[in-house]
Image (cartoon, rainbow, N blue to C red):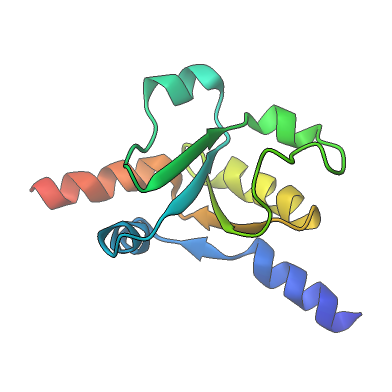
Length: 122
Protein backbone atom coordinates (compact mmCIF):
# COMPACT_ATOMS: atom_id res chain seq x y z
CA UNK A 1 0.00 0.00 0.00
CA UNK A 2 2.82 2.41 0.86
CA UNK A 3 4.47 1.72 -2.51
CA UNK A 4 1.20 2.54 -4.31
CA UNK A 5 0.83 5.84 -2.43
CA UNK A 6 4.43 6.80 -3.23
CA UNK A 7 3.90 5.89 -6.89
CA UNK A 8 0.79 8.11 -7.04
CA UNK A 9 2.66 11.00 -5.39
CA UNK A 10 5.50 10.66 -7.90
CA UNK A 11 3.04 10.70 -10.80
CA UNK A 12 1.22 13.72 -9.42
CA UNK A 13 4.44 15.68 -9.04
CA UNK A 14 5.89 14.80 -12.45
CA UNK A 15 6.82 18.01 -14.23
CA UNK A 16 8.39 19.12 -17.47
CA UNK A 17 10.11 22.46 -17.93
CA UNK A 18 9.59 24.66 -20.99
CA UNK A 19 13.17 23.83 -22.03
CA UNK A 20 12.48 20.08 -21.79
CA UNK A 21 9.26 20.46 -23.78
CA UNK A 22 11.09 22.44 -26.45
CA UNK A 23 13.78 19.74 -26.59
CA UNK A 24 11.09 17.07 -27.11
CA UNK A 25 9.68 19.04 -30.02
CA UNK A 26 13.16 19.55 -31.50
CA UNK A 27 13.63 15.76 -31.35
CA UNK A 28 10.40 15.46 -33.38
CA UNK A 29 8.59 13.76 -30.50
CA UNK A 30 4.83 13.98 -30.66
CA UNK A 31 3.24 15.58 -27.62
CA UNK A 32 -0.29 15.41 -26.26
CA UNK A 33 -1.04 18.69 -24.55
CA UNK A 34 -4.08 19.36 -22.37
CA UNK A 35 -4.80 23.04 -21.75
CA UNK A 36 -7.17 23.39 -18.79
CA UNK A 37 -7.87 27.11 -19.14
CA UNK A 38 -11.26 28.46 -20.18
CA UNK A 39 -12.08 28.11 -23.87
CA UNK A 40 -11.80 31.87 -24.49
CA UNK A 41 -8.26 31.97 -23.09
CA UNK A 42 -7.35 28.85 -25.07
CA UNK A 43 -8.67 30.46 -28.25
CA UNK A 44 -6.67 33.64 -27.55
CA UNK A 45 -3.40 31.70 -27.20
CA UNK A 46 -2.30 28.10 -26.97
CA UNK A 47 0.78 26.15 -27.97
CA UNK A 48 0.72 25.28 -31.62
CA UNK A 49 3.11 22.98 -33.39
CA UNK A 50 2.57 20.19 -35.92
CA UNK A 51 3.91 17.76 -33.29
CA UNK A 52 1.42 18.88 -30.61
CA UNK A 53 -1.97 17.19 -30.33
CA UNK A 54 -3.77 19.93 -28.44
CA UNK A 55 -6.85 19.44 -26.28
CA UNK A 56 -8.81 22.02 -24.32
CA UNK A 57 -10.86 20.79 -21.39
CA UNK A 58 -11.50 23.59 -18.88
CA UNK A 59 -10.48 22.83 -15.32
CA UNK A 60 -14.09 23.13 -14.12
CA UNK A 61 -15.02 20.14 -16.29
CA UNK A 62 -12.12 18.12 -14.93
CA UNK A 63 -12.98 19.04 -11.33
CA UNK A 64 -16.53 17.77 -11.93
CA UNK A 65 -15.45 14.70 -13.91
CA UNK A 66 -16.71 11.30 -12.97
CA UNK A 67 -14.85 8.04 -13.62
CA UNK A 68 -14.53 7.40 -17.35
CA UNK A 69 -15.97 10.73 -18.49
CA UNK A 70 -12.64 11.91 -19.92
CA UNK A 71 -12.31 9.10 -22.42
CA UNK A 72 -11.61 11.58 -25.22
CA UNK A 73 -8.08 11.72 -23.80
CA UNK A 74 -5.70 8.88 -24.56
CA UNK A 75 -4.85 7.01 -21.37
CA UNK A 76 -1.92 5.03 -22.78
CA UNK A 77 0.29 8.03 -23.62
CA UNK A 78 1.80 10.85 -21.58
CA UNK A 79 -0.40 13.95 -21.40
CA UNK A 80 1.27 17.27 -20.62
CA UNK A 81 -1.17 19.41 -18.66
CA UNK A 82 -0.89 23.19 -18.73
CA UNK A 83 -2.67 26.36 -17.66
CA UNK A 84 -1.52 29.94 -17.16
CA UNK A 85 0.92 29.36 -14.26
CA UNK A 86 0.79 25.63 -13.53
CA UNK A 87 -1.34 25.70 -10.37
CA UNK A 88 -4.63 24.59 -11.95
CA UNK A 89 -2.73 22.16 -14.16
CA UNK A 90 -1.28 20.48 -11.07
CA UNK A 91 -4.74 20.07 -9.53
CA UNK A 92 -6.12 18.69 -12.80
CA UNK A 93 -3.13 16.36 -13.18
CA UNK A 94 -3.85 14.93 -9.75
CA UNK A 95 -7.47 14.18 -10.75
CA UNK A 96 -6.40 12.70 -14.07
CA UNK A 97 -3.76 10.51 -12.45
CA UNK A 98 -6.44 9.20 -10.10
CA UNK A 99 -8.33 8.21 -13.27
CA UNK A 100 -5.20 6.36 -14.46
CA UNK A 101 -4.00 8.89 -17.02
CA UNK A 102 -0.24 9.38 -17.42
CA UNK A 103 0.20 13.07 -16.73
CA UNK A 104 3.01 15.58 -16.53
CA UNK A 105 2.61 19.24 -15.63
CA UNK A 106 4.23 22.01 -17.66
CA UNK A 107 6.19 23.76 -14.94
CA UNK A 108 5.23 27.44 -14.73
CA UNK A 109 2.50 26.94 -17.32
CA UNK A 110 2.12 29.06 -20.41
CA UNK A 111 3.61 32.05 -18.63
CA UNK A 112 6.91 30.18 -18.28
CA UNK A 113 6.66 28.93 -21.87
CA UNK A 114 6.23 32.48 -23.18
CA UNK A 115 9.15 33.71 -21.04
CA UNK A 116 11.33 30.91 -22.33
CA UNK A 117 10.40 31.65 -25.95
CA UNK A 118 11.11 35.35 -25.37
CA UNK A 119 14.55 34.50 -23.96
CA UNK A 120 15.36 32.67 -27.20
CA UNK A 121 14.63 35.85 -29.16
CA UNK A 122 16.90 38.05 -27.04
